[in-house]
Image (cartoon, rainbow, N blue to C red):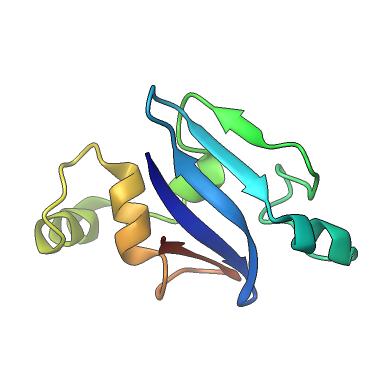
Length: 106
């Protein structure tokens, strides 16, 4: 299992994981939920205590990835296979994203 920390405006908001048996899970941090009046990671994933689960990487996180030649270059740079979206997300979304969400390998 691989785990990444997710930040909204630089504030730790939760954990995104690639599960052993396949699939993905995102859960908001308890302190983030209790703080109230905080921003969600995206509109499709409102702040709540229950985890989000999916068979595929959540579209919001997939959309943080580069495409085309930039993606190919990043895959070579980080020695990742073309189908390792989660690995690419952890390698690149900690510093160069559009918007207020960043992702860091744990």
